[in-house]
Length: 253
Image 1 (cartoon, one colour):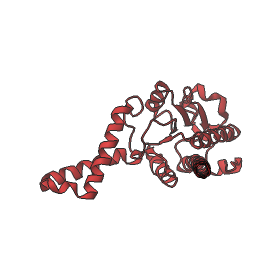
Image 2 (cartoon, one colour; image 1 turned 45 degrees about the vertical axis):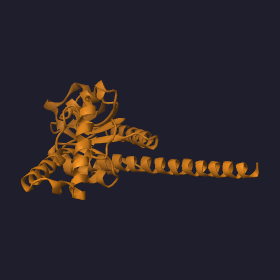
Image 3 (cartoon, one colour; image 1 turned 135 degrees about the vertical axis):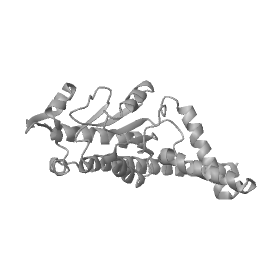
Image 4 (cartoon, one colour; image 1 turned 180 degrees about the horizontal axis):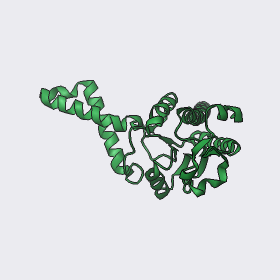
């Protein structure tokens, strides 16, 4: 797992909180001080929270679990998408789809429909339709993929969600709690960390801070994925050896 230094967190601007008058008292445990009316986050708490979160993310993915990345605010959307597309993780960055977790069966049907229509478009199955129908379907796919484009490979409920700005994405936290899904969250001084299982105290507005945290979590996802792939390869090899051994023993009978 990559090493997180206090200097790197400082340079990324993770320590800047919100104006003191906008604070949430429940965030007091990770506020270090107040300077020029701005709360300063204790980067030792940020480091500890991030390292704990990274260890969890790596472990859950290595065990075959899935993590959904959520960052729909303007400052977060681009950097979150860039970070997760490199590692092949599912994400929602345009806007949260209400009921994504609590009404997963319906959401999954939509995903399957989009994938089916995409495949039909590629294979030329739409040629049987009139031109205006093909145009209508193409426009539908283009629109719906804006919302679902990052989750088209997701075929089950995720075991965890990583959220940038739990205050803005409070509906995601609520849905995760109702479905017993682990919440890993970037939490600023104006946010309530209640309901977040792995709190990463940090600036959730500055692009530099969001990018640093998102990149670190995506890297942990990548490491977990690689561990899982190696384990599956070993299992396949053991199965192959066992099958070969059984076949040889049968021949000698």
